[in-house]
Figure 1 (cartoon, rainbow, N blue to C red):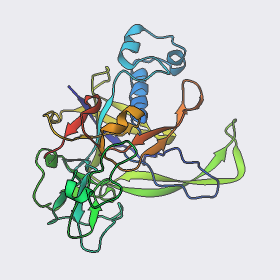
Figure 2 (figure 1 turned 30 degrees about the horizontal axis):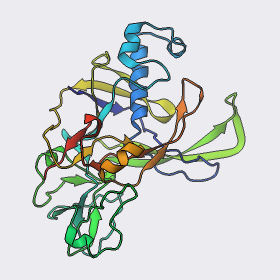
Figure 3 (figure 1 turned 180 degrees about the vertical axis):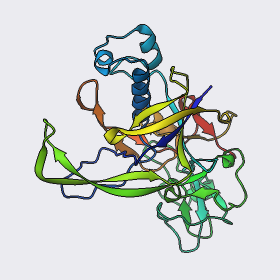
Figure 4 (figure 1 turned 90 degrees about the horizontal axis):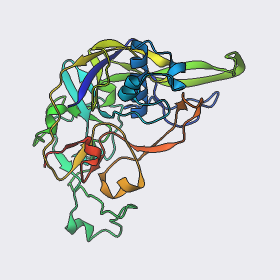
Length: 328
């Protein structure tokens, strides 16, 4: 059974990939959903604080077996997994749109994720294996050796990957979309540019080095909902430090209806998934991978870079039993 938490930030949040932060250059926008390792690390740290265990002691391996059983050893993978990262807006849960969903709009072959327009009245087109179309195309095989899914429509298609949809659409895909069925990220949060200063190893200001970052601020009546696959001993309510600059957030354990688990032809990840070679043949449809790194608190050095598929990626099987079935 999944354990659900609602997270409400006190201020902005800052998540980023592995891109360099160069002095004097504008950075990219904040990354969302964040890497699952960020959420796992935040929950582990919150648990240590509640147990009054100094991080230095945990990092050195000087803690009880009961603590290790709950959150794992420092420097090792967490014994729990982040299953889902959602938004809740005025009591309605929004999940990532599947990467194989498209809508047809005349003269709108691409659409900015910043737009908050409505897709009401439009029909969803699925990217599927269509033999009649494949025969007319020269290249229909991906680098993984799998056949490429194809969406066919009389108008230009706009991908819904990166958008957010009402959770109810997960159990029954509508013939046509209603108002607020699909939301762009900008309907859920605003992006705020921030300017900071560079520090040396003694945390002194480095003259002439300014950098800019993009922060995410949730809109009114919007919160973040996450699920992990088992209880780790966290208190029902508490405080968690999340993302870059360790921004403070309040969290509360909440009751959420369980995700569907029926057999299906395709499955979608509700959280980013690490891209491995063994996963390649199982990908049905996905946006481009993100390269992530970060700082390893255990070793005091940078983490090795890894590639991740965004939330909303679609697979031919329920990888790691962490995906949800999509309606046919």
